[in-house]
Length: 284
Image (cartoon, rainbow, N blue to C red; front, side, top):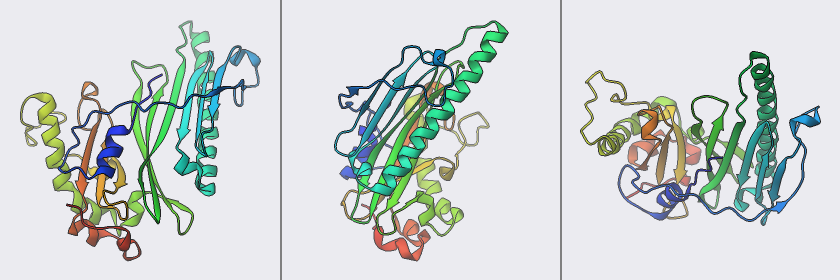
């Protein structure tokens, strides 16, 4: 199963690097050794769905890592100690873990029955989600997730997720929730995002991107249709915004995903809801 890493983007958002697009290569994070533990196929009424499941769970500090493999699917879900230390957030992530695994088992079981009745081979499904800390601030914990799914097609799909944990209210929020409107935030991000994205696209393609060419994957895309993450170089306030672009959004599958990091500017500050402005500062 593919296990994507978040070392590059997390270090870029938290470490004070400059510039627009992230050029750092993404790397796989080392997994913590897990104690072997036999578990059953969640929600499976028939033992044949999991005749010989190899699964493991690791609890290091207060984080969690769960892996399971059987004839139906491969499943992996993890979150770091910083997330597990917050009871409400830990409970929410545990609930998501259980829900994702139940959904995976159900859809895999249905597809296997369909494959059997249709006389074609069944391809084992996969799901993985790996949460990582982007910024750990006095009032906030910012997380991002690298997500991978495979349901029997030509190839699997990579995607992203993000959330903010508001320590003051013990509430999960999305980065967009902190702004007055989608239009205000889009107006602050669109031009610098598209300029940085086109620089990276040109680098990968070996030629400049002509946005008005009418060709596929040359137009500017909506940054708010992508996954937003909030980062910090000063470890006190959010001063940068990461925009994670999944495959097929800005380029063909072969180009993979894109990661653009932008500083918090005056326009971004102006788009914030008043109660959240103290949690941000203009980046450099």
